[in-house]
Image 1 (cartoon, rainbow over the protein chains, first blue to last red):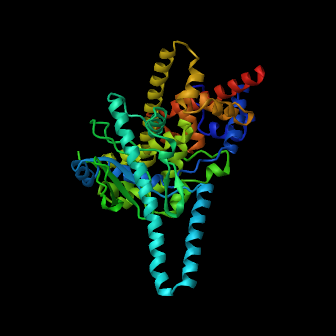
Image 2 (spheres, rainbow over the protein chains, first blue to last red):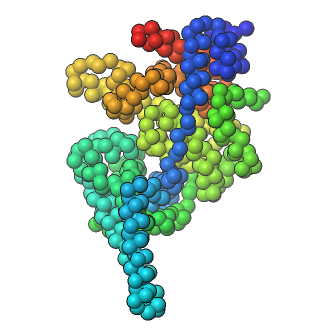
Length: 243
Length: 216
């Protein structure tokens, strides 16, 4: 027999399957409602890059010798690459760019010798990719400076969550929503949240996670002079804390 | 004795995690944690692959915000790595990782409450804890709240308004499919208390919905 303090084990699971078994109208109503809610509930899909960003965060959160090394070299912000979630508009733009490049390549193919085209086409593609990379790095540097300025203005503030930090940067006029969008491989874009971590135990310079390009998968370290270095994420060894 | 997972109300909820994990990889979670303690990055990526979907779903369900869930997912696994060496191999990994996530959720609630209190103090008016909590604490805009008030969402909103302890137990039992014994480990209370909390949460849910219907 169930008591208010300790209902029988199977009762609660059964109750939602068959609400009419409930001992009280409130319980039956609750079970019916929950049944409907469970039927309608869909587990949200995690972001495609969640695991990679988690790995990067772990690697750079003091659990890695490489993180200490970069800290010692004056790393100001740390940014990661991640897969891009394409938006329809940007995907079309990316497609257009690709089509233009292909058309140009085709013209060149017919107009100039094949050997000359073979030299030019990869160069054009490379130049486009470099342009996207530069544009993205420029935005990330801007974000790094925005974050630095924000922390100078709020030295005693408790570390906010990523989402709260992003809102604070935008609402406070430190950054624009567009700063969080980076051109990626194929012209795709994404709008990441910065991840600010590391300074919980000590007030170290902040770190920021964001996208740069894919592939390769890596971690971009922005130094105090706004120089950006792309590092291979697999360079980081995951080492639990020894106690 | 191993307690069986509760049967879920919906086939979609019965499908994930346990069965797919067992089919995909015979290595036990606890063995992977041991590998992680030895510095094997592959063990970490495998653990994340297994728990990414259920844990992220749990965080979204409890926090009502994908961005906060994203943040706490990362923080949860950061702590898993940091404390892997201290993991007791005779225990199960699942309640351990859920316990880490649950503690982070509680911290987030506390931080939200503090911000709400400061915000209300600053404004010098009391909007009522429920509304303030939903509007600010859940990271939702008034438009989102209006959507929640729609008929199709009213049950979900009512579940979100349940007291924290009851909602925690209810979500872990019905949405995550954890058995009582594991929920008891996660929330660090006796199994009887877990059952009682779920029971009371269901009754409260029914009562609140009945009142809403009566009022409308």
